[in-house]
Length: 78
Image 1 (cartoon, helix red, strand yellow):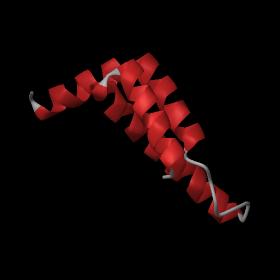
Image 2 (spheres, rainbow, N blue to C red; image 1 turned 135 degrees about the horizontal axis):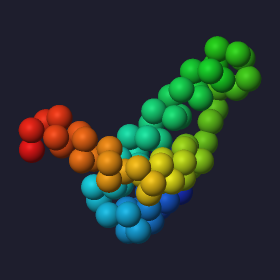
Image 3 (tube, one colour; image 1 turned 90 degrees about the horizontal axis):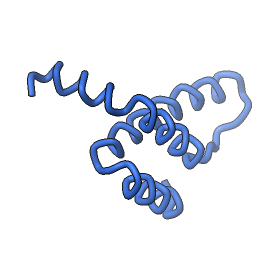
Image 4 (cartoon, rainbow, N blue to C red; image 1 turned 90 degrees about the vertical axis):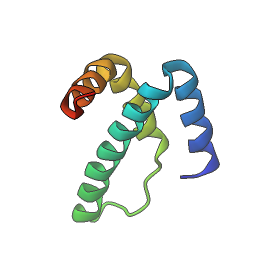
Protein backbone atom coordinates (compact mmCIF):
# COMPACT_ATOMS: atom_id res chain seq x y z
CA UNK A 1 0.00 0.00 0.00
CA UNK A 2 1.19 3.45 -0.85
CA UNK A 3 0.32 6.67 0.91
CA UNK A 4 -2.50 7.32 -1.56
CA UNK A 5 -4.14 4.08 -0.44
CA UNK A 6 -3.85 5.23 3.17
CA UNK A 7 -5.52 8.52 2.29
CA UNK A 8 -8.32 6.71 0.48
CA UNK A 9 -8.79 4.35 3.43
CA UNK A 10 -8.98 7.33 5.79
CA UNK A 11 -11.61 8.95 3.59
CA UNK A 12 -13.63 5.74 3.45
CA UNK A 13 -13.37 5.43 7.22
CA UNK A 14 -14.55 9.00 7.67
CA UNK A 15 -17.67 8.31 5.64
CA UNK A 16 -18.48 4.77 6.76
CA UNK A 17 -17.16 4.68 10.33
CA UNK A 18 -14.42 2.52 11.76
CA UNK A 19 -16.50 -0.67 11.97
CA UNK A 20 -17.53 -0.49 8.33
CA UNK A 21 -13.95 0.45 7.43
CA UNK A 22 -12.75 -2.89 8.77
CA UNK A 23 -15.40 -4.67 6.69
CA UNK A 24 -14.36 -2.60 3.68
CA UNK A 25 -10.70 -3.56 4.07
CA UNK A 26 -11.65 -7.22 4.47
CA UNK A 27 -13.67 -7.10 1.23
CA UNK A 28 -10.81 -5.27 -0.51
CA UNK A 29 -8.19 -7.77 0.60
CA UNK A 30 -10.28 -10.74 -0.54
CA UNK A 31 -11.09 -9.13 -3.90
CA UNK A 32 -7.47 -8.09 -4.45
CA UNK A 33 -6.19 -11.54 -3.56
CA UNK A 34 -8.61 -13.30 -5.90
CA UNK A 35 -7.88 -10.98 -8.83
CA UNK A 36 -4.15 -11.00 -8.07
CA UNK A 37 -3.94 -14.78 -8.03
CA UNK A 38 -5.89 -14.94 -11.29
CA UNK A 39 -3.66 -12.28 -12.89
CA UNK A 40 -0.47 -14.08 -11.89
CA UNK A 41 -1.86 -17.48 -12.93
CA UNK A 42 -2.77 -16.20 -16.39
CA UNK A 43 0.50 -14.26 -16.77
CA UNK A 44 -1.28 -10.92 -17.25
CA UNK A 45 0.69 -8.98 -14.69
CA UNK A 46 2.31 -8.96 -11.34
CA UNK A 47 1.72 -5.35 -10.22
CA UNK A 48 -1.77 -4.30 -9.23
CA UNK A 49 -2.97 -1.08 -7.68
CA UNK A 50 -4.86 -1.54 -4.41
CA UNK A 51 -7.06 1.59 -4.63
CA UNK A 52 -9.67 0.04 -6.96
CA UNK A 53 -10.10 -2.82 -4.51
CA UNK A 54 -10.47 -0.37 -1.63
CA UNK A 55 -13.20 1.41 -3.58
CA UNK A 56 -14.89 -1.90 -4.37
CA UNK A 57 -14.65 -2.92 -0.72
CA UNK A 58 -16.17 0.40 0.34
CA UNK A 59 -19.06 -0.13 -2.07
CA UNK A 60 -19.75 -3.61 -0.72
CA UNK A 61 -19.40 -2.37 2.86
CA UNK A 62 -21.86 0.41 2.13
CA UNK A 63 -24.40 -2.07 0.78
CA UNK A 64 -23.86 -5.15 2.95
CA UNK A 65 -21.36 -4.14 5.64
CA UNK A 66 -23.89 -3.94 8.44
CA UNK A 67 -25.22 -7.39 7.66
CA UNK A 68 -21.74 -8.90 7.46
CA UNK A 69 -20.63 -7.20 10.68
CA UNK A 70 -23.77 -8.28 12.53
CA UNK A 71 -23.39 -11.88 11.33
CA UNK A 72 -19.70 -11.92 12.34
CA UNK A 73 -20.42 -10.55 15.81
CA UNK A 74 -23.23 -13.09 16.28
CA UNK A 75 -20.83 -15.83 15.24
CA UNK A 76 -18.42 -14.68 17.96
CA UNK A 77 -21.23 -14.50 20.49
CA UNK A 78 -20.82 -10.79 21.15
